[in-house]
Structures are given as structure tokens and as C-alpha cells.
Image (cartoon, rainbow, N blue to C red; front, top):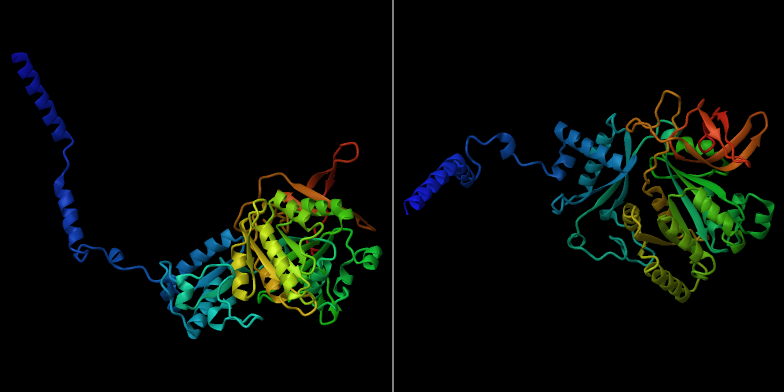
Length: 485
């Protein structure tokens, strides 16, 4: 019994020592509770903690130096994520409250963004894309304020004014110019070359394929009206978003002129639609490294022939797809409705798993471009190359196509990096050759895509393999991008 009492007393002493050693000072918690219960109005509160952060509307309408610095940092981050361009939407605070903007406020917001974009670190221009206060009216007489297919939200129901702005860096040289590559596919006689002729040449078609004649590379293509090779066309956009085409006031200009006047270039790969030239189409899809695929569907024919094969090829390569339904001027309404239902059913099937979004106004085009980075959204356009209906929306969408990450760089000189913000790529150069030319008094000229690494004038590279599997060492003597030095 005595031993048991002794052990119990010893245990109590150990517990007391442990409690004293790990005791919590409750006075500190009492002080914190008293400070919190006082509502933070005590004299010991710091001014930074008592001052609430300025709302985004105040930063945009009444900016001070701190607000300009805040907006510049945010814009730099957005431009880095968008590889040189981004879309800035105003109308709601970060918490979802409406800014209640009026006409003067929208003009002030644009002026503030222009001031921020003039920062030497940014050096960009601002273009107003859409303003819900001046919403456009579609051909059906209905004013669209949201993307078709989206559920109406509480924000749109409240009638708040929303404005979208495009911010894009000014290219200092041809190497800084933004570029996206679009592969144009679809069944034969779907209007692929005609669509590109209207976009790049500027004139409408006469209904008999006049707009496509300037795109054909061979005589038999002009005679038959069918593309049999991989054609390349470009469409430029200036800082106002206006298209810079190869035909300017009844005179033709070169690719180099278009590139020097543009802030962004869309390069089209005009691919064959006939089954006989399927290998050529596969080569263009795989070797041309397109960022996006424009699937052309004739409204009077539907998804017939090779259109399904081209769609499956794009899905297999993991390339985002958007659809353009052509010839709506000559198609009866019931046939057009059947084609759209067939297209929607195929895109939503388990094999495609796409979310078709009809684009009928400028707001829908801006939203579709902003959400087109993923694999799910599939914008659908309805155009007529004869009347011009829907061509403007498609052109706006092409201007807003997001850039996908690309590690390939082409510095302008041996001492000047391609991008002032990102270090040069450490990957070895891999230039995929698509075509080879023998130019008199110049030598061998190859064209293709820089898949990885970087290249400069004067670099020594390995060229090959040849028919025996060997590589030859050669030197890069000149670099042209879109035929411009």
C-alpha cells in the first residue's frame, strides 16, 4: 500500500511539472479577444489595416499613382499569360457587384487602360471590342448580350453594362509579331479556298468561285476548282483590329508589307478536301503544326464525305476545332436547320465531347475566343461568301484567337534575344522542313516550322537525314519570316 501511494504521488508531481512546462499564457488570448471585440477602432490599430482596399471602379475612374502601378502589374501578368495579348473585361467588381458604368465611365476606363498600357514595360495598345451599352442587333432582330447557348445569369438579368477591351503589345520588329496558324479543312466543294479568298483578298465571291482563283498554285487546280496541294495564305490585323489584306485598293501587296503593318498575323493552311488527296491533307495537318483547325461545312450538304475524317484527324492530334457553315445564302431554311442539328449531335457525341457555341454577335465572338483555349468549346459560325453575312464576326474571332505556348524563337541578331521577358530556350534546334527551293544566285532555301530551340543568322546546323541517313553540316546565311527579313 505504501509503495502504491508513493508511486501515485510521484505521478502527480510529474504531471504538475509537465503542466507548468507546457502551460499556455491565457493573458495573450485575453488581449486578442478584447482587441477583436473592440471592432478594431483602438488607437493601436495601424492605418494600413484600418484602410479598406480601393475598389476596381475607383482604380479605373479615379486612378492615382498607386492605382496605375497596381493596374500595370496586373496587366503585365495577364500579358505574360496570354503571350503578348489579353482581353480585359470591365463591368463587375471582383466580388460580383456591378460597377454601374455609363457612357462617360466607359470612355474614362479606356483612357485609363491606354495610360497604363503606355508604360515602357508594357508598350501595348488598347482596342474596345464590345460595349453592352451599344449592343449590336443580329439579323433576326434580336439584340444579343450574351453568348448563345449560355444560361442567363443574374448579372445579365440585372442589366449591368459590360465592356471588353483587347490589350496587345506593339511589335518592335517582325520577330515580335504575334502569329497563329489555322488549318482549313472540310469536304470537297465546302468553300474552303473561297472563304480564304474572301478573308485575305477583301472582295466577296460572285457565286462561281471567283474569290478563290488567286489562291490556286497549279493550273489544274484552277481548271477543276479543287485544291490538290498545301496552300499558305496570311491575314494581318493592325492595332485598330482592321484587317490588312494582300489586296489594298485594287493593288496587290507582298507578304512583307502585310507583316510590317500588322500587330498579329493569322497564317492559313489551305488543305485539300478530296479523298484522293488525303495524304496531302494529313501532311499539312501534321507537318504544318497548326494551332487551330477551321472545319468548313457546306450548309446544303452537311457533314458529308471527308469532313468527318478531317474532324477525327483534328481530334486525334488534339487541335482545337471551330466550325464555319458556308453557303447559307443558297440553302433553304429547313435544310440549314437539319445541317445544324446534325452538326450539334456529332459534336456532342461521346467521340467528340465538344460544346458547340453559336456565334451571332460581337459579344459572343469575344466570349468564344476567350474560352477557346480549352478542348471543350467549339464555336460555330454561319457565313455567306456572296452576301458577306457573318464574315465580319469570323474576322473578329480570328483576330482574338488566343496564342498557344510555343518554345521556338528566332532572334533578330546574334546578340539580341527573341523575347525581352523570357530567356532563350535551352532545347536544341529542331526545324521541320516542309518545302525546298533552289533559288538562282542564292542557293538552297528551305521553309518550315521551328519546332524547338532557336536559330540565328550564322549558326552552324546539321541538315538531314538524306537518302542514306547521313547529316551534313551547313551554315544559316539568312532568315525570312513571312518573306520579310
